[in-house]
Amino acid sequence: MRTFLFLTLDGTPEAAALLQHLRLGGADRRYLGLDDVRTFLNTDLGADPDLARAFAACGCGPLFEWAACDEFREKAAGQASAVRRYLGLPVG
Image 1 (spheres, one colour):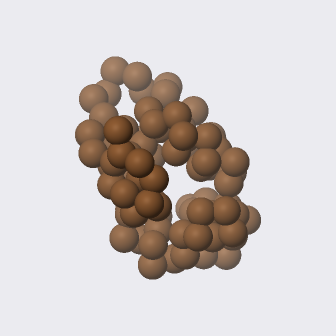
Image 2: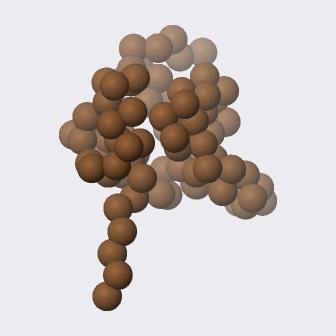
């Protein structure tokens, strides 16, 4: 059996970058659903340019590229706003 760490899980360089740059620790990532690939693929998170840039700078850009390949799937709205509020960023 093979296992792997999703790139935002503890112990990965991306998780370390999320902690350093966005102050998102393990509990924060779990609360926001950032430990689940579905959050990146099936929500509006990547449609927010500021958040997409911030997450890409932490090594998560390929997740948004992957999500863009499935452009016909409707993305659930509201995740980007929830993350912005959690990070103390303006919600617009």
